[in-house]
Amino acid sequence: MAHENKPPLFLPWSALDPPGALPEWLYRNGISGLGGRSRQPSGRSYPHPPRPGTQPAPTSAIPWSLPSEPPLRFALPTPAPPPVSIWRPPLYDPPLALTPYDHFLFSRPIAADEVNWPLPEYRYGDYFTGTDIVHTGIDIDAPRGTPVLAAGSGEVVWAGYGLYAGRNRPDDPYGLAVVILHDFGYQGRKLYTVYAHMDQIVVASGQQVAPGDVLGYVGSTGFTTGPHLHFEVRIEQNSFFVTRNPELWLVPPQGWGVLAGRVLKTTGQPIERLTISVQSLDMGQVWQVRTYAPHSVNSDDYYRENMVLSDLPAGKYRVSFDYKGTRYRLETDITPGMVRYFTFREGQGFSTDLPAPSLPTSVPTNVPSLQP
View 1: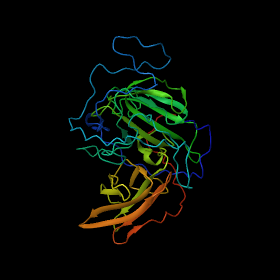
View 2: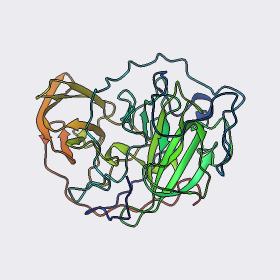
View 3: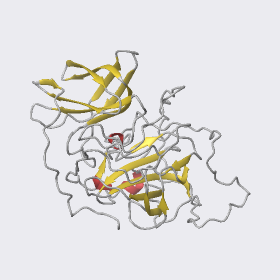
View 4: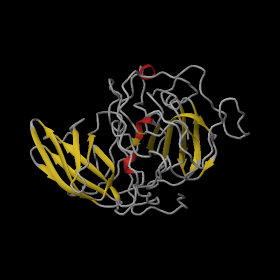
């Protein structure tokens, strides 16, 4: 859905210090994965890649195709498929900001007739299984061949292999990827979105796109265990080191909201990789999410969260976790179209007070980035 250059309401700017760089063996061991189930695309009105043996229609886009050698993959068990609802509400129209601190600016990069929500086992800030590489985006478990859609209007500034390296490199972990520099920003800062692991891309660098335009098709190029879309939000620079959690930027379904939390030790340091259960007291359904691992991820400047769980139907919820042999619980509610926030500090318990506003931090100038 088009932005039509509508200004979002009350949007502050955030940017935090970058983490340390990835190890060089990244290219051997991978950066993103835990892909999806192998399914055939369902019927839809979007154009599809040509069948084998047929000639594609002429196009001005870059004719990227699969490499001759199969991409490297991890030999990992396929995770259990997340439950697919028979019905989900339509999305809110972006931009949506019902409080001064929220910024739901992007539509979903996968249409509503397919899975278009984050893979629950591998959210932003989680470790790739068996490594110390932290996930800097979300994975959407859509089947191979599903059209990948622009989440907002802007200019394509990258289309092809080599996004992490900054040059054409077929063994790059992102595989075939597209980056959009959006024609709207966040408190005067640039916004980029990344779409990775595609089997085919149908846009070219320098091309203008509108929300919902097809960029390519879901695939498994790069370092991945199966077909899926890897999606990132980057602020101010087109760099791996300045991502934010996309679940705070993608519009939720109508009537649904988002839970964000800051879970701390007695010292005020974040508790890392803690499993948190979130149960709907109305439906009984339980979700699980882990707090962020260290390095390579960034919290929102206002919320300073280390966990986010999106796409929760409005209602009453119980948040619970075990820490150092003690079970902690909080009852809260989810409000449609908004972020519900909580903090926990060891020795002090829970609070649902919003953080005090603070001045945004400046964007560091010493992080690797691609131009523009």
